Length: 264
View 1 (tube, rainbow, N blue to C red):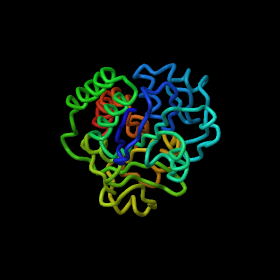
View 2: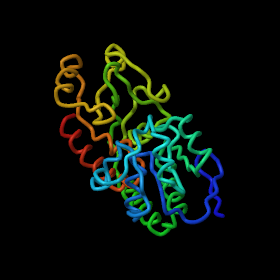
View 3: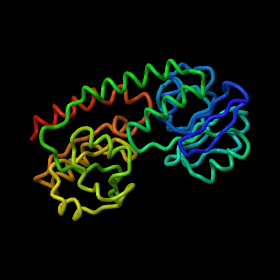
């Protein structure tokens, strides 16, 4: 029997290196692919869009918030990988009563790196995980922050508008880019109004591509109401996916900073 501790400090036991894995988290699904677990991963959510051939061919077991419990159990997994924030506790508890469930809890880059290492250990891919974390760390070491911190808001939802507080992974990514989160005194994902945005005197407004898919038409509408604010569309995966996608994030952030510098 193998024993592991997840990021909620729960101990799980598995009989051997897992051969039938179900992932309930898109960014961790992509990590499993990059660890080389093509055959071991047998179930994913409908939001696990990377890699595309997994999205097309792997068994889908519902969404991150509405997991089809019976479908997961019918796959007879020897490991389920979940996340505290992205999945629903009651659903995870039902699964954990019958199969080993390893849960991540990630609010910053360090915890993301720890998750990657732990999942590599869990799945017998220790060296592969080490290579991924080294690439991520190297990228962020080279990331240059803005010389002047820009007062910034990051929107993740519309109707109502929602942003990010100081205890989120996105906030950590904003900080590492030199953005000053104007709603950084709040926590999690507060609902805000247009008046709130105006009162905060935002210099920069980032519109995320997910979970709400902000587009150019939304940018245009907001620009009319916030004429003094620079507004750009941001790749939400780069700001919020905490698996191996982080290998690409630092390069994206460098390009984003150049785009912003040309605007301000």
